[in-house]
Length: 124
Image (cartoon, rainbow, N blue to C red):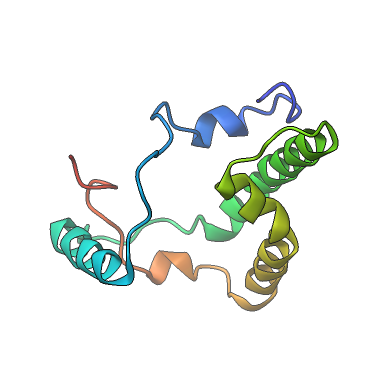
């Protein structure tokens, strides 16, 4: 993917080696329970993180555009998309709109004011 995205290394930097999820979608009640369980498992870092939100949004732009291009190519070649791919392609303009809004309205340093997890995602 990084070759297709200009070789800037961002795809590799932010991608995971984990296999894609293949389980069923949670019901509303299951999602609420899962959210509560997940939130209870987090430990907060006592300090504040550095401000990375706006920088990260900019870095991810190449990845987003590259993925959209790959999905568009797949559709033009009559290949099937995963539901997540369809959702991303159908709502790409909404995602871009939200990012523009964040860049325009969030002050620099905003994300540094938010709490940060001590260890990222809790261990399994």
